[in-house]
Image 1 (cartoon, rainbow, N blue to C red):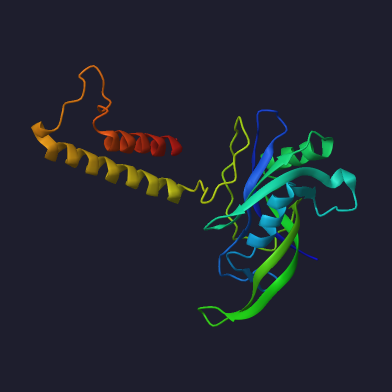
Image 2 (cartoon, one colour; image 1 turned 90 degrees about the vertical axis):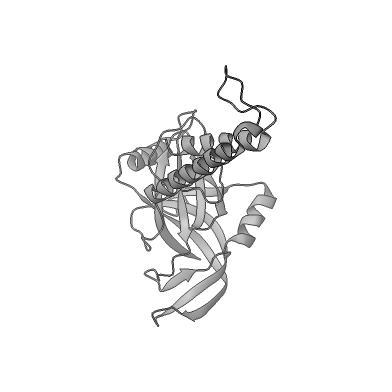
Length: 235
């Protein structure tokens, strides 16, 4: 059984126990300290097995599988276009809450997972270097640790929240993503404005008492609602 370390971040839930959200692995084609890279899809089988079992992945302190106090929470995970995204809910125990404090003030920022390799192969990277590509992994737990083996996993910003976030594909909160969203909002609004100008007098006028489009334009109403939701996601 092997272990790897990546970055994470801290959040809170409504019950006050807290949770940690981040990436347990990435698809970045840069070998880690073991000379490994991970192929997208490497976790697909094992995640399906965890899902089918109805159990969550144990969240531990420093891989302490033989210490009950080291079991500090439980995690759910899913692959997206960036890597293996996870959310770990923390337990209401002194050990878990101490870990929460350390993540919150930044003294901890990394994590690791224990795994077995079912399929791997040597590959050549674009720059000619060799790497060991991990293609099928069985994951046993995710751990909070101090020393990482790989610094490429993206840290999700530290925030407070009222509910534990769902694990969703593509969930990222980087400044680069927010800029892209704002550009998309601007483009969508421009298209909508141009469409309204072209329609001119042929299109029924919206009710003067409301800024919302009439029901006769369901596509525009849906587009406006989508623009609003994208704006909210950048706040």
